[in-house]
Image (cartoon, rainbow, N blue to C red; front, side, top):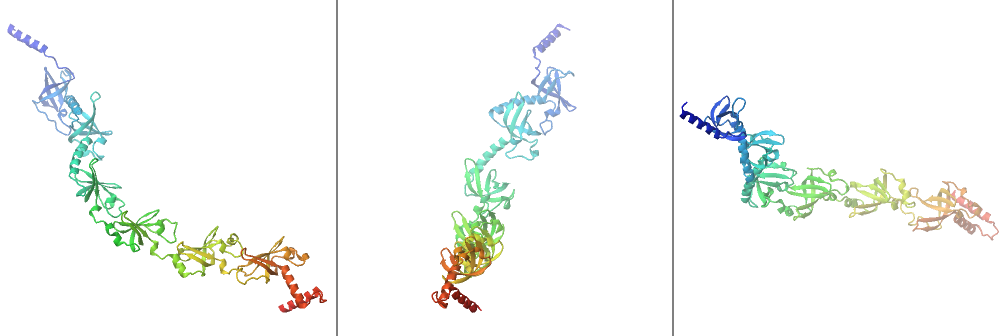
Length: 564
């Protein structure tokens, strides 16, 4: 080798030593020299070549985009591997490149493009052009997504929520992009809407309280109470998802961007003619739409509903649930009792369409009429007797018997038995019928039934130490009295109660009457003394020479003869 050649070789060797060999773990540029067996052969300079699988040059869902002669950036893992080739990676190069780009986007809060390519627990994986990010399920859309299939592999913008390069973590959101876009669109749509405006919309969702209607990028709430003038139990009765409806913009909240819509506002208000159509006191047919504890709602026409309060449902069924008087959807006749157009309320009455049963009873059963009825209830203050048309009459304790206490007299009666009574009073306003049982037989203390000095026959009912208890008068309503021991005989030796037995009939004289306390005083002694005086007057005197025994004997014989 000549000296000139030696000098050139030394110069080249020196130049090669001066050029630094690329550092492992860095990104270097290379040139595609060949493509074979599914791999690209890349010359990264420095007399080094490496191989990379073609799939590393493909974006998710796309074919590899690389040709011979292309210059690409690759990541140098090792300068030389076991095969004497450089160990390089396009994927790692893209990742490093992506992290640099993404960190800048995160700092400036700008959007980044990516594609969802996998599903993991709690969300999805997103390729951001070399770096893999996590997309939580809650950040996919503004509403829960049941099927994310259509979104897979599609290039779309994302917002970086959080990133940590050291740990290799990136969290992104698609929802933030949609919300921002929707907010802009919403503001634009709302800006073109005015209250009172009529627009077309599509029903997007139905809930128990209403429906959400899409007005072209912005949703409005159509509340169930604004769907129709009539009662709507559930929005699904008149709406279906996907249906196009005409609505009126009722209210727009510029701050919250909430829009309230109405359908019934596009129809005539039936309440405008309610007072004219349903005059107070008129009777109309209606349909029961709802039953509550306090009454029943009756629809008179679409949009006009009235309440029949529980107190206006029946004349006689006072403590019964409305559901036991009427049924939902039942057609009934009702009377208009009151109208409040301001509060949009109509008070109705069901019982007013029928005659007041107390008025009917007063007409058909004047005071003094005798009635017959079943004992419905027995209380501490009297009997309740069932009458016509489901009404009851009451027999007070004081009207059960003339001669015994009410507490004692009421023990004779049993629930379910039939009794006779007399109508004493009918109070239509208070819905009361007063009856009397003792009045059927007349008051033994009134009139000329008993007079002082009158002789009557009594029946012994009880033997007491101080005298005897007796009854007298009518058999079905007898009077009672007590004859004291001292009044049992004029002869003291005969004033013994053991002389009498229960059931004995004896004569006695009425010696006194107290109508206030309803007491009759009787005396056998007084009767004997009267008989003695009468005998002396008729058959002789004590100074005529005849003995008292002779006189009484003659009187007794005449009395016996008169009986014969």
